[in-house]
Amino acid sequence: MHMEQVIVVSSGGTGIGLATARRFTRQRARVVIVGRRADVLARAAGQIGDAYPDAAAAASPDCSSTSRTMQGRTMKTIGLIGGMNWESSAEYYRLVNQHMKARLGGRRNACSIMATVCFDEIKTLQHAGEWDELGRLMQQAARPARKA
Image (cartoon, rainbow, N blue to C red; front, side, top):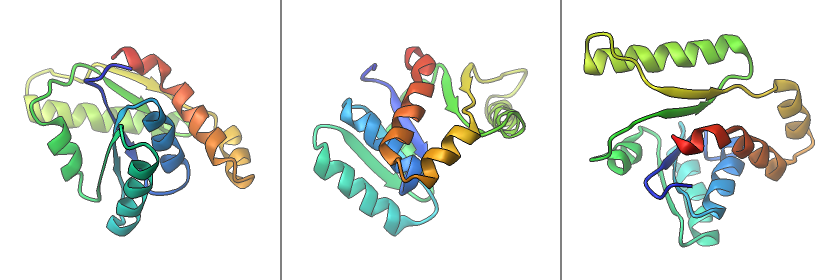
């Protein structure tokens, strides 16, 4: 993992998102978790920080931690693990590129590496409460983006 990489995990306060954030922080990754509930995010960031004090974990319901962490960095490639099906992955890709075009103008688009995971496998592990295995699965799906 490159030290300049920042892993942003959406819905990182509970479940699959939290398990994924924990997996990355075990490897001393810089992680930002985002989600809707500030109290849940703060608790999750505290747990991660207590367990892995050498890893950086920040939490924000409004993405301000993401902005502060990314300030002064040049984003070269976006690695996206998204969508449990091709339809939602296509929507994520469209939204990212729409934002890039609005921000940078012209015919700009985001260089990206995208992985879509199998929803059936996720659902089975989720129902079994296998959070660590879900985190491993998401981390494995992120491997192609590590070189970004």
